[in-house]
Image (cartoon, rainbow, N blue to C red; front, side):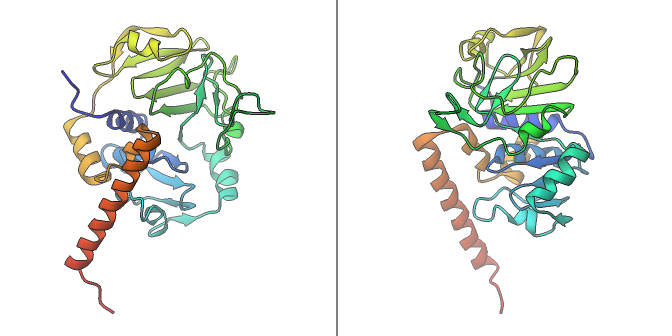
Length: 280
């Protein structure tokens, strides 16, 4: 039977369920899937979640539905405090150790990950966005939490081309977690371990799209699917435009989806302005 949810919805749900009430969570640039997960937690069992972002350089307790046209409105309309990026890195990251789900370009069997380059760093085939402080926090953070919207052997590799984020640290226990569109993973004895399978996914499916042999948790369980209420919140309240889906597609499909979302949002704004005319 085909699952009644989409990959982006189970990833957002898994992200939300990792959080606890009162956590400080950080959203990086162009990561709507993580923001959808954070807001889902805030709307369910973590109402006191504190949101921080590099998008609007602000900290807030408030939230708004995801937007492309007004991406910064959530952070700038009702902030607890506005901060510049150096202040966030200096005051929030090292002292408060907030929760942040990071999206790697490569992950290896030791849990190390790469957002710097593909190929030899001296003459790379592809230059990636960079680590943006990941190299500073991952050696010392107790938690490392990752998400991969498109599980592929080009992402899950035997050894990353450049270590910009640290996974396994000898003699330092840590809570390492990754959710992809297929499954969830942790680190066991210094190696990436398959923890749960999403509904409709087999162990063979995951191994075939992973570039190294996986350890497997015993027993291997199924990921708890999103509830009807979690799906309603994501689809109707948090992200009715489906912006979170942009992270699960690439190339021409992503460009087309981006155009469609912007078109729908602009149409919605025009309807709202006719229904609620502004006065001078």
